[in-house]
Length: 330
Image 1 (cartoon, one colour):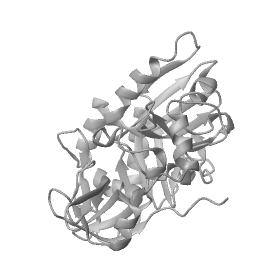
Image 2 (image 1 turned 60 degrees about the horizontal axis):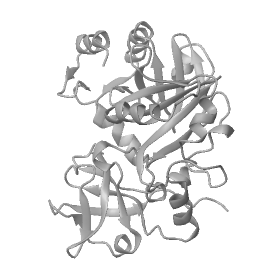
Image 3 (image 1 turned 180 degrees about the horizontal axis):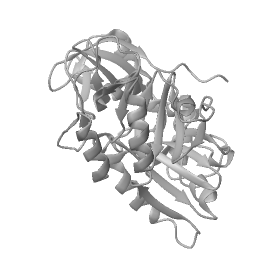
Image 4 (image 1 turned 45 degrees about the vertical axis):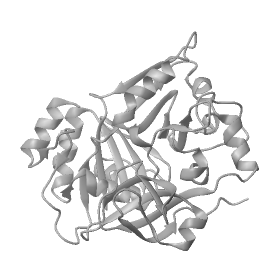
């Protein structure tokens, strides 16, 4: 993480936890405009003459169809079709940017770099030029002097760019100087929020970030990646493509993504089940803002429909289980 940015956050009232993430005092009850440091996420830059073809042969989504100034969900699988990472893939001209959890970035760069070979592709984690700020309830692009991007859009601003990350929610990636100026500008109208507050939005939206503890646990369909546009079944080969396609067309995916409420936080990867039988795993959990927690978990659909699902080790119940994403239109 960028030391100057961390020092800036500390001078603006944050304390830094053991992972270096900013923790602020609780936002006022009912605060509708929130400002967050996105230190738990990072960008990988993929650029060069062959970048589009390279990514098309590595990722689950249709990279060739990604337009300039747009983003799409995508995944990176091992040869057995199990996800090593999920990412928000953006295209800015001939340059691609992949947003993903910081804890997976180094591993993904190392894995992708093995396959560059003679291709004209450069892959690197971006630190100093891409400080992440999250803003909910206030349109940052307008605040920074440009038009706000539409759904799945990316808009250039002075010092970086703004990504529409969800309903009324944006991610800004800026140089350090631009980020400091933007933070101070936004802070006059927004309440600072911790990483956990921001992760609550991701859980509520059913964003299935893969983390080190969940790596290689799920095929893309288990986390609904195909339902949010992150898998193409008409493009060419990529690692694990045959297994992903077979799972789709033979209807072999019985475990699916659910959201639930819980009385305690559950660790990513923690097994969940019913009647002593494991039926899935936690993807993520985050504070719900009411003293409880909201949980994303991959659970066997039949088990989930019967209720009475709990974490295998702690016994914490998963209440109000429901599917997150509707089936894709055919």
